[in-house]
Length: 267
Image 1 (cartoon, one colour):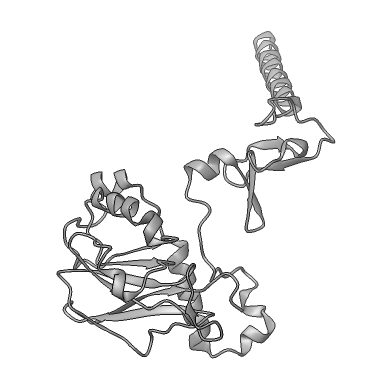
Image 2 (spheres, rainbow, N blue to C red):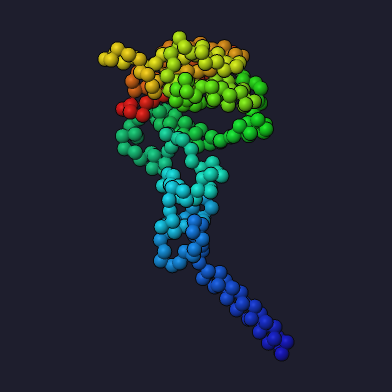
């Protein structure tokens, strides 16, 4: 009987200690990731959606917290994880209830959703990743892959771009550039080793009787191992949009690929 009482006392003591420890843990306020001070009851705070760290609202700034798609993330998570991505076709949960959009043909809606899924599943790779990891076969441009860059003017930036591309072992099938500010007559001045350039004319402003000098011009660099033909129907140059499309003809299936540029001030 005495042993039972002693065992019961020990168990009761252990449970009380456990409860006290749990209560102490609960009562210990979390610390703000920015200022390292305690976030006490009543303090306004924000929580990182990714790592659940906590910050005082007064410590929130563009250097500590980034807002993306109605969620907040700490700067560390943004810097070290593939969270923020470009996707103008992003489909939030209420996508199907967007009034006028519901009246679009169903295949159009499905196409937008498919494009969105592709962009959401894209992964980012550094030059080191491309060169040192077997992501895809690196020396075969017929394993289809593309690269796009808004170069913001060939004259100023093409040399640096060419050096960067030469440092990448991966052979992209097609490379697209926007805002080249370059006409087809001068396209051959900008060469990439192993690629053939195809330039679209810059936008011609008829009212001013001049070509747009900046923020115009798209082009494609096609790997020399690929045969292609330009698709004139899909290649247009207007004030609101510029496109250049080709059809690659010597792969298992014909592939249509292009570059599209929409000026920021376009309607």
